[in-house]
Length: 245
Image 1: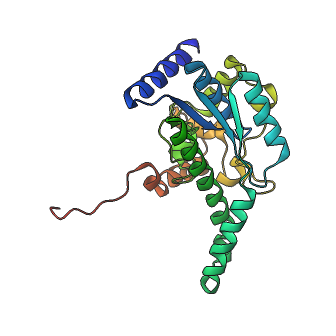
Image 2: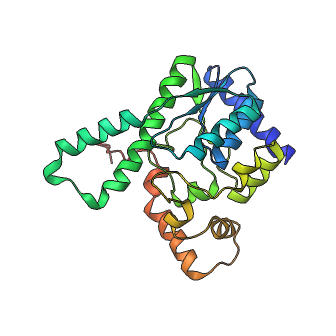
């Protein structure tokens, strides 16, 4: 694990050097993946890293865990509450498209707007300090497309995208991430009672096993493969038209 951590830290330092920037910023949610990133970037740039907490009607426990993460790793912390901005923006959009508003998609649209507001906030902070934005997606999330396009998927760097959820948890233990964060059930806190695994319809354990080439129940394998195909557009640059094609 030490070799993996050292390799990521050196890679982060190289990316900042090559981009002629000065440091790194991450949005910390109170969850496992963002906690690991906070610890990694703090090691890579002890004096030039920022963790941003961005509540939007968030679970108070998640905010508590985010603050505990930041305190434990000693990273500089900003808290920017986006609740009111999100509410005003979403309501304004709903008013303008009221005749055609699709209630069936309302919850997803609301959740995606949260993720995109948070990413806009991170890039505004990053521009101020001349930092890069670091993403938190792991291998399971990246393969299945379990992230918001131009939201939590809109970042400069993805240091743990090769790690399964199990490996991220092992790294968290090695780095000293608070136990309460390591043990909690993964959730993007998009709505009350929401968890990653409920929303995906399978478990991280089975996705990790699939990615390792192990045999898993056919139902889960089919679901994972369908998610991967359906979300390919999230992992690709925008489709482009060229006159010479």
